[in-house]
Length: 411
Image 1 (cartoon, rainbow, N blue to C red):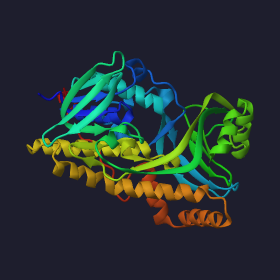
Image 2: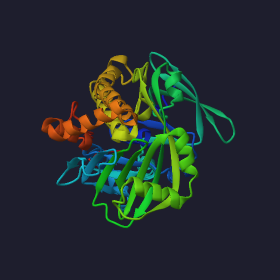
Image 3: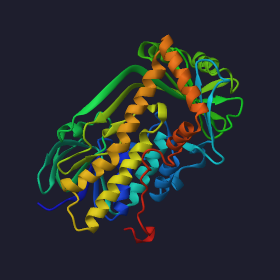
Image 4: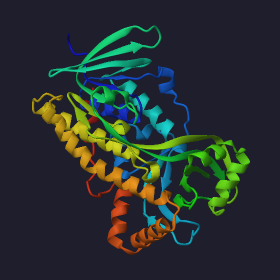
């Protein structure tokens, strides 16, 4: 049976489609399969989530031709970030940049432009409305079976490499025998857009209250994304509040810093669950995006880490092909495992530690929070290290960039 593609990817979300585009631009043939119908992939519904992007992530999006597809009203700029403990808005840890610390873009917009760009690549075949029902890896190839939702018919696919990008609750990850450690925080994140009377001046706020956490992120225009995190029982009550009462609650917790606030659109609730896969590779298989690492949103690095994985795997596969090696060989994939894991594990455990510290309400946790903020504010080297993480400019492990050569030579 001949190969249907060199690489088959399950999951047409932002990470899966970025992977497909990067591989196609590196002259690999790619098939992407997803359960959603084409219409839903082409025009994703708003889900309330806003994605913070570092400098290196924006560089990758430019390289993939995605950044230029975003509409002006979809790009918010973060020039300054403030971290506030409790109600002391005058004692914030501040991070500033002459240009931008980063940018913020709606999740559904990233999905839309990723789908548009993938459909324009001759090297990408997208199969929508199909369900992956079997993965069988062999020393020389991967065999997959998919089921068409419309009529229940099945189709066989064969590839050199299989890539799972089907969410942090990945079904494919289990099928290829990779276990994952999952942590449930017992908390829920409520996200929504709000309009406000005063300008936000491109400042992002992370307010760690003693009952709930509130992040206020600047969007284009006089709009912000309000991300409120609390225990699940309280979240259920807050979701049931009338829009005006909920907006008033957010305005009060934020200290009225943006004046009167009004809810725009719906509220969305997401349980907080983080996932770290114990391996990122198996026989002729690799994990990317949330299937590899499902991050807590407190540091806003989930999609950024996913793009680093895309860049790392693309580089590894391109180098292997240029050397005449089998792209599905275990030794080749081990390079991706090393490159992505050393940074991902530090980010995952560090973020979880911060989230647990700031979810605690006891006196010990409060003192620890104040000590951490004072230490970061008064120790320049620590503040510089945190800045490097926020912007994607340096850090413990430099971000991997995509360098795909002359775009005019891409098929």
